Amino acid sequence: MFHGLRRFIYTGNLNGVSMQVTRSTKVYPIVRARSATTRINVFITFAATTIILTRAYLAATGYPQIGSGSLHIAHALYGGALLVIALIIEWAFLGARARTASVVVAGIGFGLFLDEVGKFVTKSNDYFYYPAADIMYLSVMVLVVGGQIIRLMRKPTSHEALANAANIAAQGIAGGLGIRQRRIAIVLVDRAVSQGADPRTVLAVRQLLAQCSDTPERLVRLRLRIIGWLPSFLLAPLCVTVAGWSMVLVSLEVFLSSLFHVRYRPSELLFRDTHGGADLLAISNNTYLVVSGATFILAGFSMVARGRARRAQTGLIWHLQLLQSVTIAFTLIGAVFDFAQFGFGGLVSLSIGLFTMAVIANETNTVILGMSLKVRAERVRL
Image (cartoon, rainbow, N blue to C red):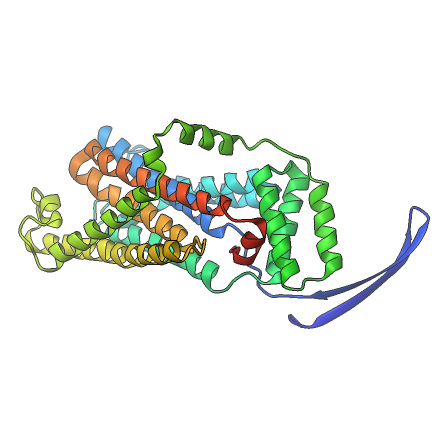
């Protein structure tokens, strides 16, 4: 039975000392993993960046064909191969580095595969099929929203908190633990204790964490060094307010201009030099309606929740994490349109989006660091 309570009794001796251990365990069918949202964001970032770089490279080189004669090796095949390699990395190796590598490789592979989605949904194998951007965006938004739903559906149970802490400890035994990861594990253990977890299991996880060797966190040090170079006003909460609401207003303007066929709306500017007439313009309108509508709803909801959290000083961060996910999707997938219209001029909007991601990430880390370990344990999310 999945939810049955099972009790085991072991007897024996260890180093000549007789011992009897009673273990009571409750088996759960599903346990959510910590940092799933972060991994999804990294996956999406590498996937979308791969799409942008692939299209830019193909446009710059005249869309070369790999193969000779009737043979054409689509780069979607390379994407599939990278997805398989990511699975092998996940299956074959232990530790946080292997998990990160698998996410990065999978993101690149998914980007190469998704870039050719136009060929798979048209009879003519049309790589330049315009609604392909819609499909890309919706695919990304399904991942973003799905990950957030799984994460926010409930707070971690004592079993989930303790299981994730034990998983961090296991990774630490394999490759060591940085200070940040060790603190996260301690917060998760404290969360489990506050919910009445088995003291013997808690003690075992604490002892396992104590055995993990320390490792330097090079990426964290690099991030702190970069932050130290930035002007202080760029790190103020006002930057997140301005950037977040700007994204909400821009997405609303694009949505309304496409919905009511405003003259010189963005969709008309994008396709003004192409063939296809009214049909193509209708496709572009639908594209902007989907992209900007989803962004307006999710980003607006996140900014309202952020304002309430700041006024109440709750220290909650789920709204910032949702806003970060929406920003990643809106910026990187939207960059496909910008590069199609402006070429490398699309780097301007891409840079603005990356800046927005950076200031949101900085505020998230600031809120987390301002919490005591007790508060972190009470409000921890997976």
